[in-house]
View 1: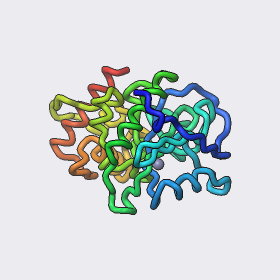
View 2: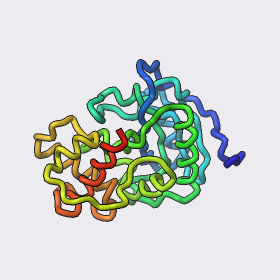
View 3: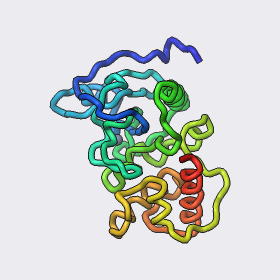
Length: 234
Ligand SMILES: [Zn+2]
C-alpha cells in the first residue's frame, strides 16, 4: 500500500558499525519508554551506545535510524539457533510502547499495520525465514521481556510473517529439546533457571494470555506445534 504518511522519516543515529555477515533475522522490540521522542533521543545518543534500524510510532509513522546494510546495536547479549552474533545478522525494529514499566499498553492498529508493511518491505530486500522473525525476549530470555505479551504475533503471522501454530500438536515428550530446536538457547537448556526463563519467553509469545515459567500440558502442546513448524520451515 502506498501511503505518503508511511514513508520512513530519516532520523540518523551514530550508533552503528559494519556488518560481517548477511542479514537473515528480524528482531522486534518495544521501546519501554514514556514516548517516541524520548526513545528517539536515546537511540541517537552516542553515550547510550544503543540503536535500531527502525522506530515505529503509535500512529504508524516510521523512522529510519541506521541503514539496513549496517549493524545497529539493539540485541545485546543474545542467542538464536546456535548464533550469538544477533546484531550482525539482524534488522532491529523498535516499536514505540511503554511496555511492562508503563502498564503494558496495547499496540494501536495503525502501528501494527505499519510494522507489517515495514517487515514486508525488509523481507523484499533480504532472505529472512519465518522462523527467524523473533522478539528480543526470544533471543535474550531472562534478560529482556520485549516486545511483551500484548504484541500480536498471531496478526503478524496472519499477514505472512513469523510462525504461528494453527493446529495444536500432541504433547511434547521433550519440551526443552523442542524449545532448543525452535532456536532458544544456548542449548542444551540444562540450567533450571535458564530453562524457566526460556519457557516464560515462549509463553509470552505463544500463550500470551497466560505467560508462565512452568510447563503444563497446554504449553507442551504449543511447544511441540511450534517446533514442528520450525522444522518444516527449515
Ligand atoms: Zn529490546
